Structures are given as structure tokens and as C-alpha cells.
Length: 463
Image 1 (spheres, rainbow, N blue to C red):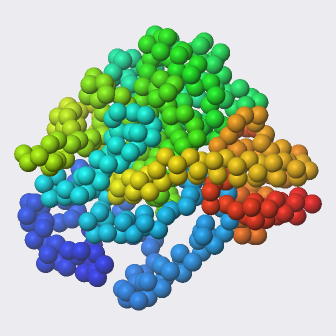
Image 2 (image 1 turned 60 degrees about the horizontal axis):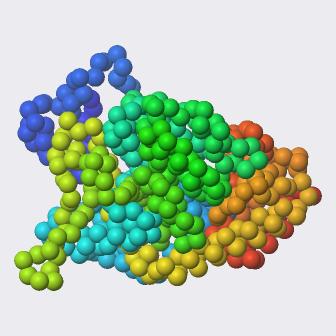
Image 3 (image 1 turned 180 degrees about the vertical axis):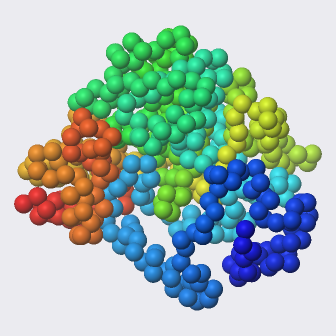
């Protein structure tokens, strides 16, 4: 392998330093690191890469030119959601996110980071109160990671090997479930009712069995529908001894009953709506929650921060609870592992919940429902558009059918982008039964003028 010259942007690239590193691990060249890879499958040519930019000022200019091609949600009106949503982030959330005591994705030591550990414990307590559960994990990578871990928990807890999921689950999440869950359990999809998008409970009854470990559903669904059959779904799951695992958007819980009220065993979701910017998809953090069932808690893969009284009255300490169940302790014997955690986002979500309180969460929920309802009605008045195309109650997101307009969703979204509008998520590929439909997202950040501008833009595009 050709020896590189030292590079100003690559640490330890000076040849003498590299040689010391190689000597420390007992090899003579970088080539030896890859000795276990057969030569016939190794690329032996030169990579077709542009010449390196060694000047920091030129490199900065080059990167800024690339970034300038992005279209962001600040300079455009954004109606795109489908898993990462634009909500208002209070200034105090940004202020605390930048504090040196907190600005890391990882936990630090429990003996040196007392404030950080207490902040995460407060987050767990606040979110637990919101969703009505006793135990809440520290954040996982995102909603899908939390859901996958929860379903594996259900398989271990019940000793069963079958998972039932709704047909309306997003394609991305389903693919991740296949990747994580399929090695230990089969996954069956439950049909949706065609005119509502809700789970078909008749199909659920016909497919659930004594092998079913968990019935997973989301409320609201991926298509934005409020799952009014939640109580029935949970009852069906428990009638066969299966766990009910519910995915939930926590910002809905100021106006919608929490999963605990309809009997959920495990609750998962994403804290991104709780004061966290979209960050190009990076501002995500999943959570797992349940009631205080020691046998179920023993199956958690995620870390749990707990509190204990100190030696002096009024003093408390914070540390991991039941650490012996984690992959840190069990290592190769662990049935699951802890992936990337998101402590910083946990702290910010805790700040958001503290700031909003019960009244604030109720107000933001009502505002979202009112504005999304207004948007749906305005779009439904445009000739050729059916909105909402599904006859259900919805929160934040709703399906808009453009099939009778003579244009595809892709064409419409391109025309909207020319007008400074991000249109809805194109559903025509995954949900062919819905025709040329898209998923529109309206939150508290959208004004009446934003919605009216969208309406006028669509009228012009479809004329």
C-alpha cells in the first residue's frame, strides 16, 4: 500500500508517528492490518478521487459552496414530516444545549457529572409522567431503534417468536425491523381498513396466535390517523398472552390519552418533537418505557438512570439501575446490545417538558390539531384534490390525494419547491392503494398565511 504524506486534517498521519503506532501493535505496514481480507476481493487500483485541498481557507470555501445547494426549512415553508417534524424550539432549549456541562452525546462518569445525571433522571421522570409509565430508558438512537429493542424484549419475555405490525408502518422502520427482529422472530403485517387507514382488527384476530410475542402499532399511525381502535387492539393482544407495544409521538399526549390508559405493556417513540431541531435528520432520540415489572425491566437493553438517598439528609445520588442486565456487563453473553445513546437530547427534551408543563402541552396539541384541520379543509376545496383522503381523526399529518388532478405527487412537489414550499411526503411508492397521495404535516410553526400560500400555490400548479 502506498505510504501517504502527512495530512493537516488527518491526525497521526506523520510517517514517524504512524510507524510507532504500527510497531506498538506488532506489524510492519498498514497493509498488514487487512491481511485477513483475501486479495481477490480487495481493490488494488487507485481510487478516483479529486486532488486534496490542503489549504484550510480553500477547503472551507469548497464545503460552503456544497452546503449552499441545500434547501432548508428556515428559508422555505415546510410541510414535510413522515418521521422528522418541524416544531418550534424555545430559545432556552438552544441555550442549555450549548452549555459546556451538557454538550456531549454521552453520559460521562456518575461521580463527576452529577448535574448531567440528575438532568437525565428528571427527563425520565417527566416523560414517564407524560406517557403514564413507571420506567423510561435513556434515549436510544431513534424511534426505530427503540421499537426494535422493545420487540426483542417482548420475544425474550414471552419466549415466543412472532411479531405483528400494521400495514401502515413506514417502509424505513419496517426494513429496520426485518434487519433486527427477523433473526429471532417472524414478522406479519396486519391489513389496514382502506377508507380509514386504521388497523383491521378482524385481520388481527385471524393472524394472532399463541406464538405471537407482541402486537406493535402506532398512535398516531404513520399516516397521521389517531388509532381509535387502540383499546380493542390491546385487548386482542392480551387475549393471546402477547404484549402490546405502542409507538407514540409524545407531543400528542397533551390532547390524546397516553398508551398506559389503554393497557400498553411497552411504549416507544421519539423525543425529537420535544424541543429538538431537525438537524438534517440527526436530532433524533428514541425511548423505551414500561410499568415497573421487574421481569420485563430485566430485558431492557437500554440504560436506566436511578436515584438513591445519600448519607446526609436531603442529598441524593444518581447511578445506573440494574446495570448487570446490560451488554456492558454481560458482554458476549448479552442477548441485545446498547447502541448509540442521546443524552444531550434527553436533557433538552427534559427542559422542553419542564418549560411547557401540562397546560403548555395541551395548548400546543390543540394548536396543531386546529391548524392541521384548517389546512386539510383548505386543500380539500381545491378541484381534483381529496383532503383528507382517509376518513379518520388525525393529528399533525394527513393524507392528500392528487389522483384526479392529472399530475403525480413528484411533479407537484417539484413545482411547489420552485415556489419555496416543501410539499408532503410522497406515498405513491409504498402505499400504491392510495394512488397519487402524499402525507402533509402541519404543526404549531405554520401560520394561516403559510397554509393559504400553499393553497394558492397548488391552485396555480393544477390550473
